[in-house]
Image 1: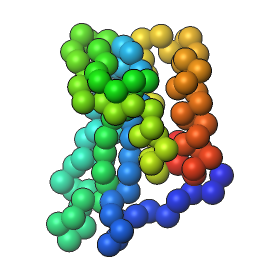
Image 2: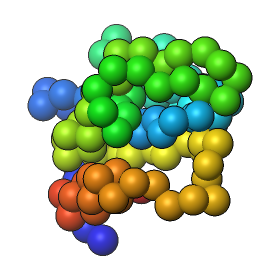
Image 3: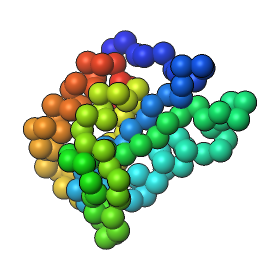
Image 4: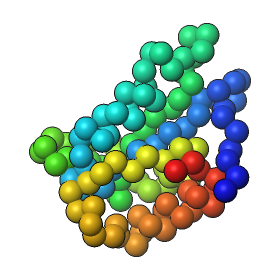
Length: 114
């Protein structure tokens, strides 16, 4: 797969998006959130990454530990992503809904890094 170039120059930071499915595992979301949002991930005071979360529908998702992940964008956020992270979720042994799979496929066609 061909990858988009890292956009850490004047065109803006690299876009990383975490896809939060229902019953997202908080620890698995926290690690990429820390990496992509860290103050260490800066060059000349500018962030290297723009990190956001999305869900099957805009709004919020409840984690396996019971707290809410709020302000999630919808699946359209995957199309703008350059890196997509899918944290573990409570029903990981079941396939995600078709709209989620379609969103991931569109992101891959747009050359997002898995």
